[in-house]
Image 1 (cartoon, one colour):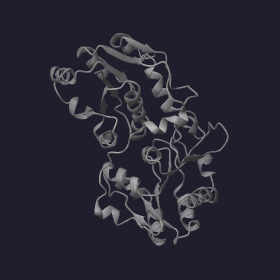
Image 2 (tube, helix red, strand yellow; image 1 turned 90 degrees about the vertical axis):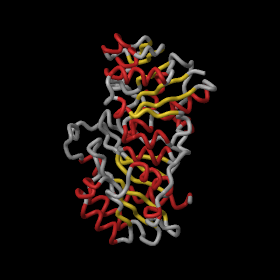
Image 3 (cartoon, helix red, strand yellow; image 1 turned 120 degrees about the horizontal axis):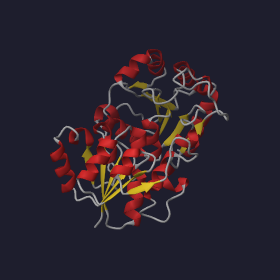
Length: 336
């Protein structure tokens, strides 16, 4: 039985879009065992996928002396490692551990020294979606990979954590439970806080229970919006959830609105009504990072904007009107 290690130690959205590799490998290499190397703060997501057999916490592993790191990897009996997120320390460790097949992209110099299967794949200027690029790393293991519309069936998020009672009480069975996750920890341009405030007033309070989420630090940045959500009968859960709890909350809600950030990809992977608000800036544009799910959609201007790059305020994403966003969200009521 082959054991394959998927290495992706970066952020939430990236990890979510890597999980379909595990599902696809399970389907096409029957009996294979999937190990996933991830950062501590994304571990709750990886553990929720039924396609992952074992999770390795990179933050714990990297604290060990090198000889213990090597011994730990060797104990996993890994046959193949796929460097989905390239990093030289992991690549060198895999080589020293004697993993037989070591797959990485050819545009990293250290991969030429540490990998024995090099894939001609460049993400920076590719027209492909991030999930499609991830599948490009499997070319040594398969003749074909799924098309983008088929990828959602491979997430496997069925081992979800239980929802704590204190969070369950924020949900309303008589209304559409809609999560606003307005911040992205700087990963992408964000819809302005006042746009969310206007949206609150457009969505009928008798139909929508708005729940606002984010970290405690993010909550401090959006005080006015939190007050507006409470004013329309919604719930403020900023700073109130761990990632596992947020995952459970999204799984029990009806829909989610966010810019390009991890919870957006979690919601789409769970098959929830999901709306992503994107700036048309390469490589952050929706063609590369849109949520991939059966009920996921995006709003973005049809242009290639350069003026908003480099962390500047984004006029393009703020050009998306609250009325346009409300129209998409209200259409979800028809499918409930």
